Amino acid sequence: MRLTEKQIIKELFNSKERYKPLILKDLYQDPLILNTDTRADAVAKICIENGPCLETVLEIVPVATPNNILNKSKLMKSLLNNSEQLLLIVAPYISGKAAKILENEGISWIDLCGNMRVSVPGKIYIEKSGNKNKFPDTSPIKKIFEGTSSLVSRALLLKPEGFKSQYELADFINSLNANITKGTVSRILKSLEDDILIRKDKSLIQVIDSEKLLDRLLEGYIKSSERKMRKIYKYTCENPQKTFRDFFQYNIEYLACGFYAAKIKGLAFTDEISIFVKTIDDIRNALRRNWIDIEPNSEFGNLTIIETQESGVWFNTIIKLENPIVDDIELYLEMMNDIPRGPKVADKLRELILKYG
Image (cartoon, rainbow, N blue to C red):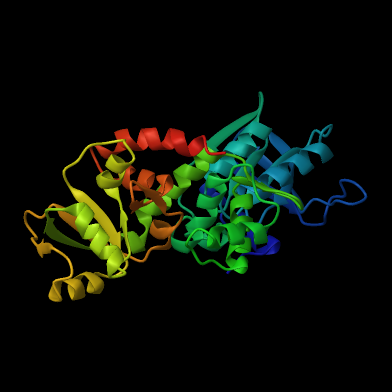
């Protein structure tokens, strides 16, 4: 359950021991008028043991997303520009990215987990970090870089010039062999905006930091439970092109992936063949009817078949040399996880992805 401003202040002053050598005292919750439209949430004194005390304006941020923190810090700085009072942002938890924003803005902060950075030149400097988030409900939406949710970020990377609306973005995703609702797109965009990865206004939705967005997709790919649940089967295949023609003839959906896809794209060499299929049952049925010429071989098979219906795998399928293959973003994620050879291929793909558009 998300904490209210009053609950945050109460928790802060009930847990003073965790902030030593910083001492919090003399809390005033009667709001301080900063201008005709804005009031501070509370005023208190903060002191250093056997040191100076400063009157401090407390600004409470119940949901400390980077975007909220950035907007709040800029507003409060403008209001307290000529004041001798210290501004202290207080939140249930301040992430590393939010902390960096506050440091760049020159604003002190403290969270309910015991982390803080309080800096007053010539008077106070205290920094504590590393305490984990005890209030996960205040974090951005989880798993936006996994499964169907990841398609929003992938689409934004594919079209860095941006989209005019979330409806256009949803239609673009669904035109590339995917299925996502406009409501899901809206929720994901809100979280990406909160994390300052995109900018969104009435006429344009656009990536701000493509490299960071790609890195977050990689983090989601590593954690993905869908990826970890993939089932893998091995076969011997003497004539891949004939086999794949048979696949098409009998409506078996497949995509080249892994180093085999990298080979088709001219980025690597391999004797192994790796493909995704949506269901292994189609392969088994074709084998029973002698429709395709491959044989199960769990030990020495050169054809690896991976069963998955993951939306990211089938999104933005590319046809090259008559073969359907995964797109550059999916292959990049695969190669980054194929140690030790894969990251060298991934470096080339990363350059291509960040040059889209």
